[in-house]
Length: 267
Image (spheres, rainbow, N blue to C red):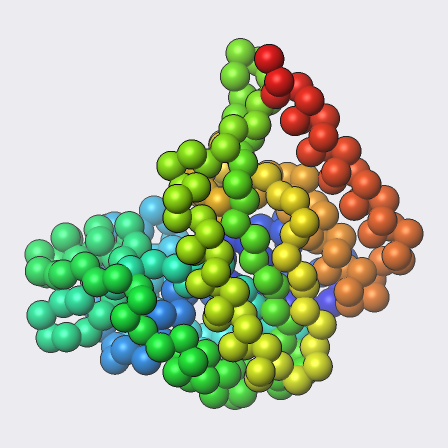
């Protein structure tokens, strides 16, 4: 069994639900844009009151205390998989000047604490300095040649059941922002490539679908089963756990699912 630590969001984390050849030993989700910010100590009980589940409560607690990398150091792993899919977010700037990621969880926490804040655009940050800091921290967790970059794709379509059949719908509300968001993710990824020590890079998906009934809600980075399944097989192949023939079969299956769903979405 190949052991892997995950530093990323659903783009990397969820595919491990579709493999019995790879084991996740640690999993951390954090928006990297506040990596250079000082800690924001918060009572754990306040976090527990606003977090949707224990996983996100733990992540919020680690992020506030800036203990992400200390947590990642615990335990052994053969590789660490990294993605920047949820780096695209604004800031909440609070009274003492500290900036926090502008996510729904932080908004709920600040409201719970009755803490005034001001929203700022995510463009007010240095990608180069953030990625540099990230790899400085990761150097104490795992060697750079064991870090696998998972290049994230923002899906343009999502699946939704309607009148007993699955149909494909475009992310109409997101279309205006998707190109800008995808370009921002690529900027982070391209900076990260300068620090990687020869570990494989998982290329962007050629085609992917989001799930309209995803447990974490509809999002361009919350994929459907067929996309996660292919990503799991692709990582297994990259790490030598399955053959090229098996990967090709899953590739054909994914495209078959996509075309079949697209055909049945046409009225």
